Image (cartoon, rainbow, N blue to C red; front, side, top):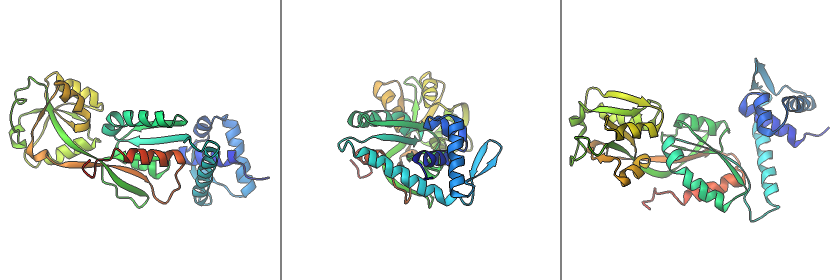
Length: 298
């Protein structure tokens, strides 16, 4: 008996997802067929690849070093398949991104990429920075875009896009016409903010509490669009990524307040897993995304 590509694909998917049922659904097999493929692989190798804990599957000590080899095989096979059409990039691309990038930058970027490479299938997930980093580290995601600092020996990060914090208000808000609005003058302001896992919320809170004792937060939501709608209705001030409010500011639906203490630039980084071969679709998208990079002042 020889090891088959199906067995390798099942093994990699179970290791990444943590269950046979989830792996089977992703690959397009029945759970019984996926289970049999994994059992045959373990029998052929003579070692247990997973430790079972209820319905969850965790790599065994013997299975852990095999995962990188399995992923390398799958990447090489994907590249071999792509050689049949030298001018076409094909494959599945899994991207994780924080909300400002995932919701306001990637839609047009991905649409342009797909027009150029119609053989690619994309899965974009909007997640907090830490979840994006964990997904890339575990290879559940191929690449990611994050706003938080990257301190991991498993990840490579390259600066990609500049952004800033934007304090915004409805056009009729009493502060909307002020030339400047230092944080010290906003002690009594009512705030409409994202929930605390947002890097924008964390950055704003850290800076604001240097100048005022507390924030009067009257409304919180996970959705940036919800925040913008509530601010637009005049309920209070919001603080979001500049990328997220560009269209509303251009239309006049929102006004930006000039807050001197928040005139700093932050960087979104493009991350990938260190020392890991990437499929052709991932390499092509990285090169395509690099054209948008404004780190050099473009």
